[in-house]
Image (tube, helix red, strand yellow):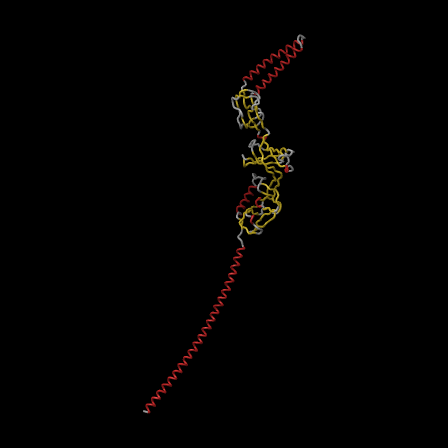
Length: 421
């Protein structure tokens, strides 16, 4: 029994010892595993922190880079905003030519060779030989009155005149023989002379029955018809000599110092819009009309082609002076402010404001005295909105080059005008 109890205690003791050793082993193993896990966790946390810091650094760098890009973009946009697109303009070329100083006014053409044909005899109008618009010569028959009555009157007076002449001769013979008195001779002579005067008057009326043109000219009006009874001083025709047409001008008194005899004038009439008729000053009235403040100027016209007619309304330019072979520019290119003039000259792709001095002005052109050179390109359209050194784009350069070539070709033509650009 003692041995079995002893064996039992020994077995229990071994079991307890084995259990203790196993527990210690488990505890050590657990401690060892727990240390390893903590170390790994710390390492992982350290790596995570490092990654987070790196990510934050990257994000910060990205933010700094993004801000710089934004600043650069904003600067570029600002520069682009400041850099405006070029302004489209048109240009013209400075050229040489002739220009005039003129005074413009209006006139009504008047004919100095103007005649009204009136009847100088009485009778029925038998024939009319001309019509309105016909050109007639001085002395050419225009119409004919019935001369039957006048012819009889002439024949009657002629017979009476012959009778009285014989009576006068008889009384002269008697007086010479001292058979007649001087009173009878004087009475016979007086009667004969009186009758002779009536006879000549009747012959003159017979001659006036043939109505003739008093001047060379054109029949502008016929006032009678065949069969009308014509009396003395009845108006029959109107005749105007077109070569005697004059332009009558009324100029203001301030122009009296500029106007002189033989100065050229240029006339344009509505009937012939594409033609310019030349003339010259013929007479200047030396007195001023106190009511209108003007003085009268009469200019003769070159109407060899008989284009002009009396009563035509015309526009006249009196040429005071002419400058030849001077620099010319279109008037629309010049900007005048405070009595100072300037233009914009093309320099590459920029517009350069250039002051100029202006002389004569005529027909849309101006004379350039200083500031420009021949062949300079001057802006003609768009210059009102330009500033000095503004960027521009010429839009009609090819057209202007073609026009310059054409003008150069035309200037060599014998038909090119030397005056009136």
